[in-house]
Length: 227
Image (cartoon, rainbow, N blue to C red):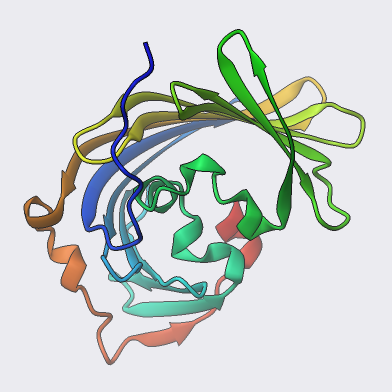
């Protein structure tokens, strides 16, 4: 039986959620804990509690400000790929999970097929890219898997979405990511979400956080940020 879903919503969603991510790569394990707040105007405020403490403010244009309370430093990065609208939580909150915001990254849907009751959409890049194709797999109208392929047809990255919560909009409370960095090795990241709250119930003080006027400007290596 097909699941009846809520009507797709716009970007005007207020929510807060906590997430714990465990990443394993090259025999090393890193645990990250964060609190996320999505403002109705599209701004996203993220407080990282572990392994280090910082607060990140990102808008829909890709301006990211990273504030470190212990040193009173702030770093500013402008990159459209960092836009808050491209964050996984924002994608689901806005209803963009129907294409996982791939068109915003320059991908066009090239085919669609049905396999065993699952709908598989294929997307290809509009320009030359390391990713030759992306497959997006749906079950009961919701994405359950996303696979990035290179030109040789080899899987480079896989995302699995599970444990959906349907209180207001469907949001996966578990996301598993596997990235094949080199042959015989991979990066695995398991993210578990909890304490999902909407609208008036989302009352975190992060929604009103402002970086202190006296914060010192510093720089950050973008490559470390993307890692």
